[in-house]
Length: 267
Image (cartoon, rainbow, N blue to C red; front, side):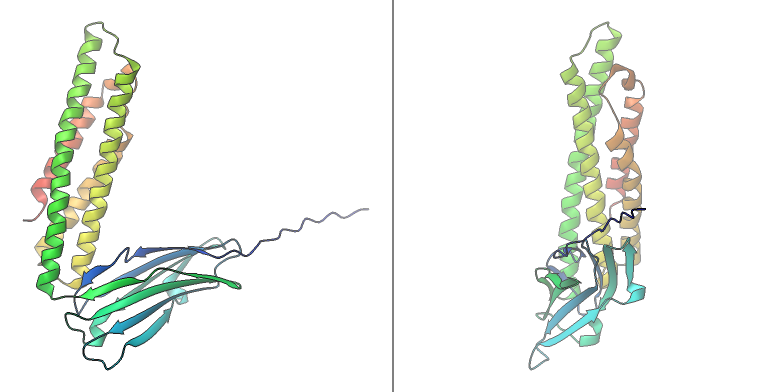
């Protein structure tokens, strides 16, 4: 009797690392409780996930270098090769003042291989400065939603023209159906992006304890409503005559959602 065995060899490669939060350099207040969110994966599995941070302050004679190993209750695993770490960096412990900064770097290790992220800089500013920065970002999202509302109106008109042509016995070209479907799909992607930006604004306002509670609640409500509209906008198909019947109703719903979001955004 012959026994056949299969041997699986996993070549250890440097891990892949994604920093989900903070995604880029940004302003924070001296009392910020900043969420940290990082993911890493490797064929042979992740053995260690850490964050190194350097605190530079006018109150210190030299930079304060510290680190944090993500512990068991801060980690989630997806199989044996993927690891995600979440933690909160509390800057209020350091007595920072505007002009200081904190430099972050993330590291993932897999057996003998390891990889580290680029530095992310958290610049300390006064709460009023951060409010102005977030307000400017909010105005940009408001402009994007206004443009999306105009585009949704144009998309509804395209659907109406297609419906009228069909009602008159005309046969619109396949290119017109495809164009209408593509326009609506792109609009869905834009709404998804706007909802993501607003969620980040809300999270930053909460983490830095800026803006009153009603302001934050308004943003959270708009995000929830927009995210409910995204599947409708993105999945709406206009590429065949049969699918046009209910298309305008869905587009009306999308338009109403965008208009409601614009009305709900705080000034």
